[in-house]
Figure 1 (cartoon, rainbow, N blue to C red):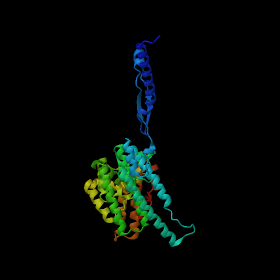
Figure 2: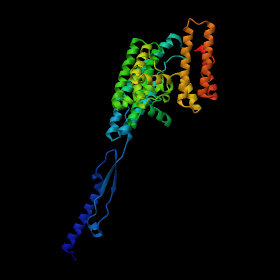
Figure 3: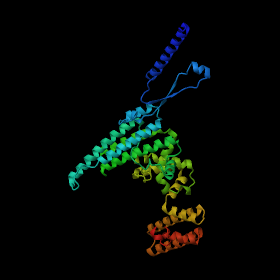
Length: 414
């Protein structure tokens, strides 16, 4: 029995469709899109809406491509190239800065290790001295190039060295620095302390290089460094913040020298005194040594006092000078320890000043014999002892004798 034509045609079409399906399945992997080295392809088949439609129209595969970070594509030895690669992948600027500075510090360690002169152990004398100087010169040049490279990438407020001003791990150190510099945002605080450390490191390098012998060229280099330092601080801080920091740093050496609490000066007046002092003593240009005493000439000291007297007036300037007197500071401390008013310390201090004046007048009086002069001085001394005892009391008076009050028993020594 011959098959019907309709059946033959249907069978042929089914076989053709089956063959086409097999060919498509074999070719589909080759036709799938290729992904880049920094991507991974994940294929997920979306479920069919209905069984009947799925049987007739199988869903096409869906390919999801997800990013995959490869450090090898970003890594670079050159600082600028490394920063460019990090920024190209969207790395935060703070992270870029931290990575570049860390690389810079590693390079600095390498420079430091290579700074030692390559000499036999027993080499000494002029040969070792010259070799050491040359090694230090080469290290300085390498350091300057390294700093320039890092600054081109992340800006100038960078310090690669380990300075006390940058080590802010301890809460106490950070609190002290914030007190010294004054109120400012955290980001600004980090930049300013970094700049302070930067200048301190260069100041120390210059001082080490000169070995205590300052030539005109060294002074000129230090002046140029200070000028750049002030310009960069001015760029970091608004004028009010820079003025506040300048006043605080200028007054730091005075905090131990003067008992401001023993005066009637207001905080605004003390701040203004700091700004006046900063005109004569640039503590900022001393590197880290903010607490060093002022290195003023006698002429500068007189000019400073005249400016302070003009600002405060005669009476309040006298208070300021008294608060810096060693004997008065002792008396003020005693009055605090014995719960005495400030007026007690002031009274005894005035008695001492009066005794000094009277003793000097008696010494200058040529009409008196030596015996009369000694008798008058002894009489003044006894009167002062009774007066001090009445003001301070027995306990405080006894302690004062051993802490600077020896003049009560030896007025001739005044």
